[in-house]
Length: 107
Image (cartoon, rainbow, N blue to C red; front, side, top):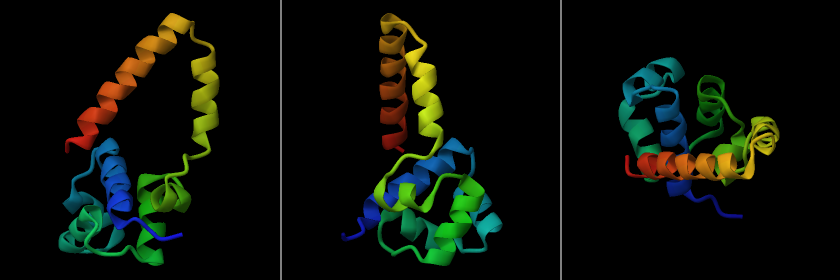
């Protein structure tokens, strides 16, 4: 399986934004330059294992999430919460999630 550097970068940027961190703030926590992180997020550079593990520590999630898009173990908890909602409430939540994802994709 070939790594999709661009998708990996999008996942990192999405999680960084979800944590409310700028590139500079994240870089100070993981010990890499802003230029390097920017290149990773744009898909120009390939992420290394040490950097990936540092990102997991700071941003959360697993290496699988960043590398191939597998969802974290918290997904089971989210699924069980969604199942408690009525069909109408699930529809509202789906619309909210679509809007949220679309707004993050534009960044």
